[in-house]
Image 1 (cartoon, rainbow, N blue to C red):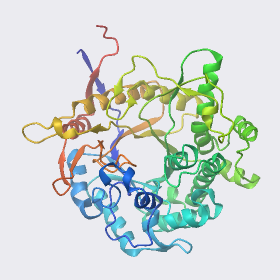
Image 2 (image 1 turned 135 degrees about the horizontal axis):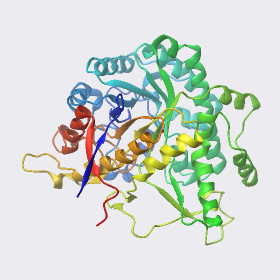
Image 3 (image 1 turned 135 degrees about the vertical axis):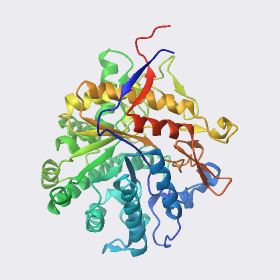
Image 4 (image 1 turned 45 degrees about the vertical axis):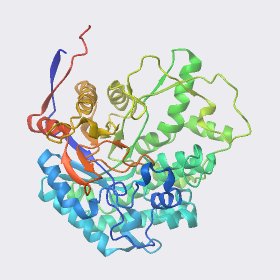
Length: 479
């Protein structure tokens, strides 16, 4: 295959990510410190692949120095993880800090900085405390929003002098979509009004924490920035026909613009209010809350992009006996001939990086942004081990290089993208799939004490970081 050399721009972030609940394990956790994820796992362990879950995860809590050593060896410029809200406090109502967990976070941040890896910290990655879910209904409650702001203040007080990259949420749409829209996760309640209230309250919480961040003058004192990690699905209509175009617009409105617009523009689309009113799912809000959102927009955004989303207009009537679902306006479209990741069931279409880059440039004021997650999950990777015992994941190398190539094309055309973060630094626990599909640069060997070893992709990523260049397939090659 004919290839071309791609150059990485100067100061371009090349890092990797993970989250607290997917890596730390329960070591040191008090019985009262379950998160929503812990509660779901305890209730429905049978739906988690082979019974693995957050209980041990990768045991990052006890092995973070070993892992940070691997980060240094690979040369990661940045590493993103979360602070587990349910673990950081022992009393959520009064924001009483768990000093043992806080000291651990302190050590992780210091160890990263000492090893030349810039920490990026997310305040919530599905880790709402279980007791707040049970007592208040989780993010459906404005009281939980207030408690989150109090928690954020404690975190900023502890680590605001060293952490320069802060994020309120990772993928704030996901939990309520799986619970209240699709009803495929505990407690399996299909309730679209609750789904939309969670959406709004998380958008408002981002604005409130941005307001707090500004009041603490963390940017002025320490050069820090605050943003949010979103997962807008790049959505393509089956055809140019108006009915298919409308299907794609409605998907984008209800799933993507519900978060992108308030965070970046400070407002919600008027069309969203009209659709919510039509279907009786309008979130509870006040004019003061909308003003808070307008006055407290993020500095930048991280975007998680994995695969395209393809839709077409519905071909069958909606069942009026079930609650409103955005699928009222669309059906999924299965593109013939598409390239697939057969292990994860996701289409591989690297052009999503370029298309999103152009959208950020033209529709969102060319705000600073970066890829916060992108990666390829593969089942049973052990079969790809060579004689030396290293996983030869050439498929992952091709996946990353193609997505990075299209991202850099967007950068060359003026999109204000400043980096690429791989999901994930190491294999880790995913919701339900647990360790079934492996994503990491670093293998976690479950059968051998969770021992770590670098995959071929880690050595390849290392060379990219060292040389600021890589080889990628030419787009103008025709066979």
